[in-house]
Image (cartoon, rainbow, N blue to C red; front, side, top):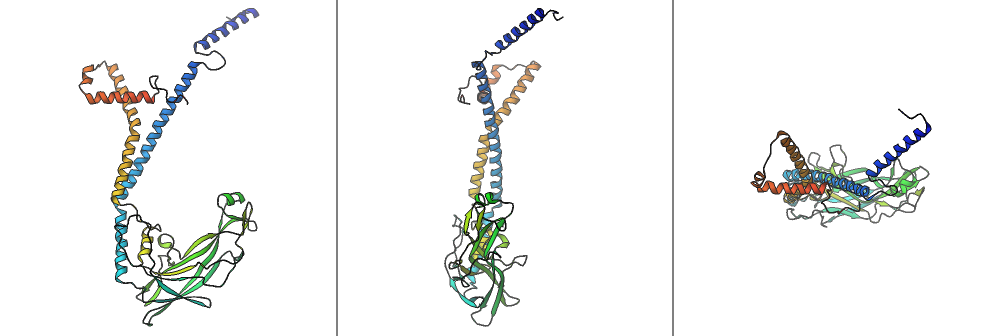
Length: 398
């Protein structure tokens, strides 16, 4: 029962305070700053957390290495490089047997101006560092260097310049003449971005903010024009190479959607926060190059096979070496996690054996030297991971 008097209640409260203080003293609390025991316990916990994080990160890294190794091994087994190189070398052999552009005379006409393309044998360089398995060939294309029209300024209203170009192809015997009309050929264009503001336009897109249209813009100009042509045996005429969607195939880009124009970015009239505009003055097309290639040109075949990178990838041997390296790294990085799993299973078995009354003597352990060494190794690993007091304090700064 509680005392009825005030004095009795006060005494009871005082005794409760003394008891609480004694319990706190037993737990190491002295008031003010934490005691050495508390600090050591906190550092111990931090070391345990840190080392378990290392184990988990090593496990994740091992899984990543295993995934990369599997992908590379699959590529090595498929041997994609040999397939691409074989197709490329076949194109080189066909090209060497029949060079079909040599007897052609090609003219370009744009408006009232006409330009003749001249044969060029300048080498076409691939980006593949491995050239031992690639056959050489003598390149041939028809080129014209220079502007195709008089001086032109940027149209701020349209934002682009589209022209119709005509290609006249005359055979050497003057018996076959072909005319190809190329519509909507881009000579300069405006690229604009959605979901932008003046800040993201300037610092992320590196663009120009058109305050009149309230959008972010960048400007590009055609540097090169290149067409792929082929001879149609049915109509006995030359025509542009087309993809499955009846779109013309150029020399730039990847896949079947290779475009005829190769662009370069050009600066606008000004660039600032919330300000900008298209280029002013006369555009310089003096460096424009126009080119005609045969559709089976080995350079175009290489561009198609490599998806525009002009490299056929690593060899099968290189892929096997990389895959073995990643597999080895995955094994090394997974050792801490494997060790913890083995220790956990061993502890459960020992607890079960003790509960069943089974005892193993030291002689059984000594009979198997490998098991003894493995046991000592994993026990040491467990001490490191659990940050036991026997381990040197390498992480005292945590």
